[in-house]
Length: 347
Ligand SMILES: [Zn+2]
Image (cartoon, rainbow, N blue to C red):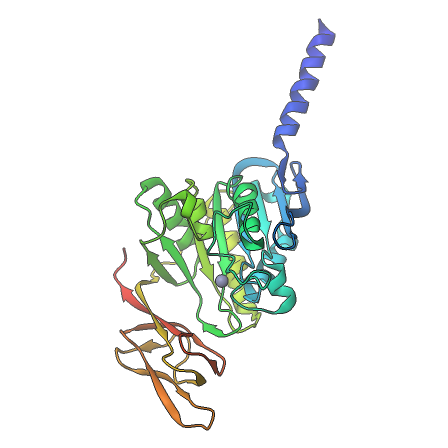
């Protein structure tokens, strides 16, 4: 009798210990552990890849938060922020768990190619929920959907200005119409702390055509935000710290860490975004800096031919904040020159 009771206790302990383990890809962490591994993307029509993943399992129960960076792997500040957080986070302090993917697009990082995965020329934040039979980008995103999105409760997708983008920090709050989801994601975006927030209402509602990582999470019932800091290949400490602090403060907001979460009090809310695209190929010269305000029709830059003659002037199509502006002289017809965000009342 006593023996069978003991056996039950042991079996029960084993079961609860097993249940407490969290496995993502090849990384498995028990309570109080930080484990590293890979999201294995098998070869298909093109080569496979192994995406680094870290699982941090806290000592106490709580939600699972996914932190993902490097879909665009020359948006370096976002990657360095998660590399720093991987080192600094202590599983002993955490309630719940973290799934951290600091560098999704390894080929972009290795080859220093902005915007896309050079293996197949696709953006690694436009083909969610992915396709196990597609090219490398689509196969990788299918693995991230299955291993990261489906195993988390909340998600933050970290970005920044790419090699050719001079960007001021901002975040996105996407209103889905689902009250529970929207109030949680609004709390997350305010806790993240960036003081310019883009209000988005036109994201995909179909989980099978979610396109973006944050929409892949939200269409699966998981509150998610996207955040941007850093620009033009830089890793300024202020940008990296803003991203790290934002992640930690969202953890406090989700009660995954002790302490009170602060919230940005009076953010500048941005509504419609006007993208300015170049009408011509040539050499680009910006006339305004990131984060400045442009009036409608204001000149924000110009393009010359290769002999220095001005052939086109870029003008703000509407008034607003210069969220980012092209930071390199290379300009092709149809390339993005700048994004101007219209300021709106608090939604
Ligand atoms: Zn990006």
